[in-house]
Length: 343
Image (cartoon, rainbow, N blue to C red):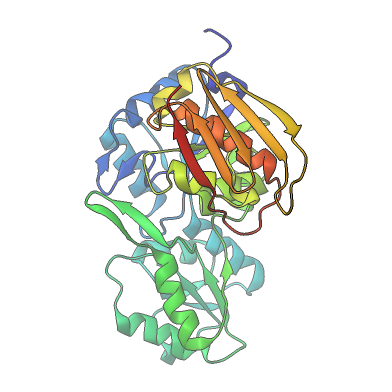
């Protein structure tokens, strides 16, 4: 072991699934092999998923079929987190209407609550999770129940999209938004980007320096940051270097890698330098330069000038560092003008 590899800075991996390990039913090339190598070298791996449509045992079997030997105890789902929220807020045996899959219903039952499917059953709560077979009538039933302001509403997650083999498809967040639009209500969100699901994962393996790996800034990275853990964005799913560059502060990852195989490469080293050429008119002379590998970037005003190749992730890493140092607090996504110069 070299000791300077990226993976060596951590004592466990908390990994997302969709867009990191697989897209739809198929493995992302190289991902299962990389995760098996992580485990073989003694790093525990816990899978943290916002997909509430399947049981953790089903997810574990899918992973094992793809070459990542996994048990249900190594998977934490937003369905489990949602059931936990319901169990905290409701009396045992309370009726909960399921707007989602049969797997979600079973997890709610395992939490000591009674799953129901209709307003006629007088539920005290509604739990909404992703199910590819969900229909308009299911969303309408949830809206009818939630017309009563005393009915608790819990969403397992609010992912706006989900990676599939054919591309990016609407996620549970779009279905939750439909019910929210009809009811003018906002649900409690149980899974990512809230911190407890990640804290639970670290606790399961006794980790004190875990790293959260994901493809989405607004769930995986934001949730890992909220938990106080290091975060790695991998470019095999939803977010891209362009969206990462303009990310709000809370969603900025600690590291960015192309694929999971780069966990075994040396951790990228980025150096920054600050300067000021003096203000002219309304244009600030404050600038930040960052270097990574053979690439460099200089951020000033609303622009980032990058010396390097746009296909080289080190060039983007330099751009991230320069722009984020220049704009340390961004509550809304930014859109810097990126100028590429050949090194």
